[in-house]
Image (cartoon, rainbow, N blue to C red; front, side, top):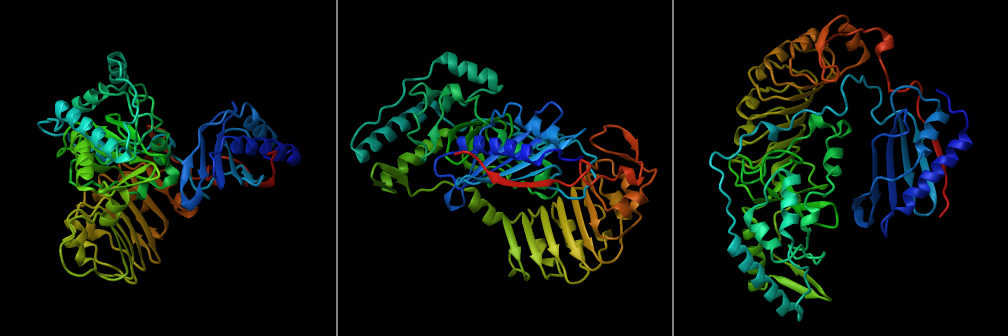
Length: 511
């Protein structure tokens, strides 16, 4: 592929940069657009804006007409998608790359849209589901809350009129799930809060917005480039209450922050949960949801109690609550442990992931009954036997030598990444029936053809020499959906979907 006109391409990229800047939120400090453009000039687009103090904000999909298609045609791309990556500064400058991708030399066998099932898909629901909310109590508490707010603020806030029953019925029909009775009762008081931020400073959505919320953040977070094979989805506290997923149809956002997070009612709870419980989800929940309350009723009760205790501040029209709800940061601090030496003795029931360096003894994990993910860089070969006693799903291991035999029988293992200086025997992999992700690109291996027996394998990362060893082997791969004879000829090895490295551009755009 050859770019036939660098100046024409620069002009088109300048036009795209101007569109990005024109759609930017106030106060933005930078933007990044990624667009994978197909033959028809269309394709997946993601846009994010950098905001002050490290915050980010997702941008809406831009209408760029045929500009990306023209860039593709000038680049001479044929087949696959052409990636355009655009970095835009508010001062009027941009940089861009056209072609290639962000993954480097990788063999693509997978359909990028066919992501693996989440652990939440495999969890059962509650045996006897019963909501904890009380519609009458929720309304009583809400009216009491409004009264106490008015006392603090000095005036009664104007709220929207009640929601129409038709709007509520239509929302439930489109969602495919009923609203919990207590939330529906509150909509009969007022249809949202007109962005007053009544629910712990989250804006309450209208009934008409319940089925129209934007969940593109969830789809983006599940793209392969975000290391699906090494990301742990945490089990929120209390254990088993919420399914381990990023987003589910039965999670209904009803209140939003200004930063891409939501409170949602969970109508598809885990085995220890209750329908109608409140969870938080959104762009900052990379490791899954956080449990907030057993019902909307309880959420409103906490608001009333916070005001009754005086746990609030009010300055210049801004009412803040000192009774903070559980956050994703607290959940991750409790569940993810970084180690450079063995931890002090004692049970750690909340730890679900460890990242450790310099350790060669894993005996301490026996006191971590919820441990699901291990990242370990060891100075010597480490005995993996202690991992048999935990529900291990993800293992990333770096060591001078690695023996997988002690893990035999660990049926929960889903993802394995190896870094080693000496050959690792892959024969024990046959004992891991649930393994769907394997990365051996940084380790010499023996018995590589054991890969053919991994019926659940969906993600495979190899070096070229390892690929050559698989010549003629039949492997089930997710993208092709049937047994495929691998042709290990050099022509089958692709560094990208294109034929040449990406080209870089820099320039200015009209402001």
